[in-house]
Structures are given as structure tokens and as C-alpha cells.
Amino acid sequence: MYSEETINRFKNPRFGGEMKNPDAVGQVGNMKCGDVMKIFLKIKDNIIKDIRFQTFGCIAAIASSDAMCELAKGKTIEEAMKIKYSEILDKLGEIPKQKIHCSVLGTQALKKAIENYKKKQNKKENKQGG
Amino acid sequence: MQKEIVYLDNGASTKADPKVLEKMKPYFCEIYGNASSSHTFGQKSKQALENSRDIIAKSLNSKPEEIIFTSGGTESNNFALKSIAFSNKDKGNHIITTKIEHKSILNTCKWLEKQGFDITYLNVDKEGFVDPEELEKVITDKTILVSVIHGNNEIGTIQNIEELGKICKEKKVYFHTDACQSFTKTELNVKKQNIDLITINSHKIHGPKGVGALYIRKGTNIKAWQHGGEHEYSLRSGTENIPGIVGFAEAAKMGMNKKHMDKMTVLRDKLIKEIMTRIKNVKLNGPEGNKRLCNNVNLSFKGIEGEALGGYLDQYNICSSTGSACSEKSLEPSHVLKAIGLNNETANGSLRLTLSRFTTEDEIEYVMSVLPKIVNKLRRLSPF
Picture 1 (tube, rainbow over the protein chains, first blue to last red):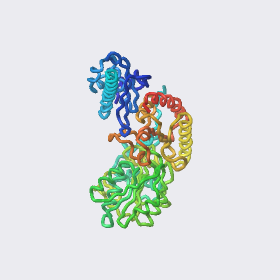
Picture 2: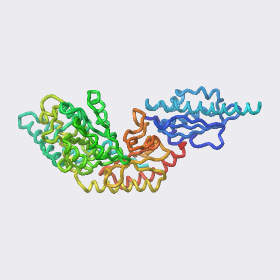
Picture 3: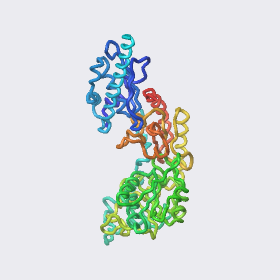
Picture 4: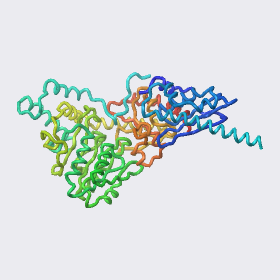
């Protein structure tokens, strides 16, 4: 069974939908298991100013994407890299055991987006340096 | 929001008809004797058992002594496959089935493979049909049994059972069909369709859970699988579940009514048509028209995961099911949807709605009042 918190986030996610002109995007998952998660970031002064998700997946996948976004917003990118899936689970309350992998996917998507951001920054710096 | 449950998961199980329950009631506290007892009281149970057997036999155009009551579809499928395999292994060790069977067939076949039997899993076309010519080609002199699901539980495909049966008869190979979904929903006639063994059950046709039957053609070489007090013509021991069997027979009697089939067909087609006209990028899985089970709707919605869609419908008290990977313990999309050639995204985006004779037009309209907006909402959240 899902907790009320999980159902509410699934039905009315606060961070769902595409972001225009993001500073970075990260996508993880595969179609075979049926979960694909895409994270959009706006970053200023090393801080995640805004975050959005798009998820192809079940109730747990959508709800954990939303919880993960809430955890990441306002954090520095270093802090955000350290978000554990257990923190997402704590936020959601009860979800079925076989759905825990969905929350793991959430943290992976965020890390991927941050890594992409760093790559972009490095390229910019290199260009400026050159 | 609608308070009552809109139950569109009748492929999983059905509501017992209250009239069925009434027929069962005396067999708990009043006529509770053991049908094997010789006293008059026990013989009343025996009479109820044999009356029920007559009803089930008639529903398949078979003889009463060809009906063996079991605990349900899974037991009947296990009994048919394992017992035919071991009773006929001196003739051969080859069994043919399909890639779209219920797990009680597929997992039984996997087990039989470990016992030394060779299993051929037939392909199906994009609507889920077995090609009779392919069946004919793979039958060898080692083949002892062919088992093909009659009406598919996921996509509703009704096989051309008569033609497949004819081939098996010509080749002198036993022919079994799992008819759990099709029983009372399309014609089932052992003489016309050349079937040697049929699995049917009760809880898919508004009868109680925990009871089913296996039709076994007279003269079939099959031995007992469950041993004990030699009940059911010594083929399936265990004190008979009289209330369940009485309920099963009553449900079968009430279900054999063309009016019910016609009603479900109209509502099925209305639901399919409404969804496909009002929602874009939807694909019907399985065939159209009279080769589809009259109560089955299975659609894939582009960009949406089936369990999320079902989960949202659940919030509106609508019961459905899905073939998506997320709903499976294995985290793999449905083997049936893969067998008809769907890619992972389409298979994971499937939603099954299965009707019953109790389904109303109001319920279909209620579904249509919520489904389009749910699809829109989930599509906005989707990266595809």
C-alpha cells in the first residue's frame, strides 16, 4: 500500500513538468523496467534555484521524483549530490518494497543532471581560459 | 467523485452473483454431509454434486463422467499438463504450447522441461493468433499434447480452437485448452471443436473462488495426480467442495445466455470507440470484433506507464489492471504483449479494462468523464 503522502505527490506533484532553458538536464532509467526519469535544473551561485522532473513510471516513481526535487531545491550542488534515497523514502512514508528502486532512480537522475552541469561549466571555463 | 467501486477488472475475478450465493447457502449448515457417506444425509450432498456435474457437462456439450471438479484453473491446468505428460511418456516427451499462455501453463511447462520433457512455445501474430499451419509443422511423432489458451486473459484473442483441434485429432495428439476467460463468453463445444481437455473455473463467471473443473474426454489416457480417497472417478481425490461446486454450476447456468454476451460486446465497443476518439495516440492491443472476448479492452497510451494510469483510476474508485513491468514481480513487461511484438514503451503503457454482465453504461460514461484528463495530466509529466 502507498501512504497518503505518496498518493498526494503522485496526484499533485509540485515539481512536475518541463522546464524552459534549464542549466542542466539528466536522464536515467530504461524502457524495459518501465521507469525513465528526467531532471531539469536551474543553478545560480552553485545553488539549485529551481528543479523540475518528467517521469515515465508508476505511482512510486512519480512521487519519489517529486520528493527528490523538494529535497534538492535550495541546496548547493555538493549537498544535493549527497541526497540519499533513504531521505526520499522518509519523505514519502510507506511504499511497497518492490518500489524502492524507484527512489534510487530519483537520486541517480539528480546526480546525472549535476554531473552534466559540471561538464558544461568545465567546458565554459576552458573556453574562457583559452 | 463516485463512491461506489467501478469494477473493470473482471478478468482477474468477478463478483459472485447473489443468486449463486443463495443456492450455495444450504450446503454449509444444513446439507453438510460428505458426498462419499452412504447414509441418506450424505447422499443429499452426493445428489447436489451430480446435479452440478450434469449442468457443467451440458455447458460444454459433454458427458457428466467427463467432468472432474478441482480447486480452480491453476489446479486444472497443472493436472492436465503434468498428468497427460507422465501418463503418456512412453509415447513421447514433446509438448506444444504458446508464448501467450497463463502462468499456470507456462510455469508448469518450465517444470516439465526439468523433468525431461521438450516444450515448443508457438509464436503468435500481432493480434495474438496461433497459425494452424505452424502448429501442424511442429507436431512430431514424439508429440503427446498440445495446449493453447482459448480466450487470452490479457488481450482477449479468441483462438480458432476448432481448426487447432482438428489438426490435433488428425495427428492423434491430445488437445487441451485453458478456457478460464472464455467460458460462458464464447462458444465452447467439445464435440464440434475436437477438444480432449478443457480447464474452466468459477470465480471468473460470477461463482465462488476456489472451484473449477477439468473436462477430460472419455478414453483419454490420464492418471490421477492427487491421490487419496478416490473421489472424482479416482482421478482427483479430496472431499468435494459441495457449496463451491453448487455455486459454480449455478453460475455456469446463469452465464450461458447470449443476452449477456451481446450486452458486454456493445459496452466493450463503446468503451474502445470513446477512448480512441477522445484520446490521441492510443493503440488497441489484440483483435477487433467477434474474435475478441466480449468483455476485454486492452489499450496502450503513448508516453504513460500503465501502473500510473491504473493508480490514478484507482483514486477515482475504478479498478483496472496493466501489463507494465512495474506491476510484475519480475520487473519485465507482460510476456503476452511482448509476444505480439509490442516494444517496451508500448507494453509498459498498457491498461486492461475487463467488463462483466453487471457493467453498466453509466459506469462506462463515468470512466470517460475521468480518463481523458488523467491521460493529459500524466502525459504532461512524461519525458516522451
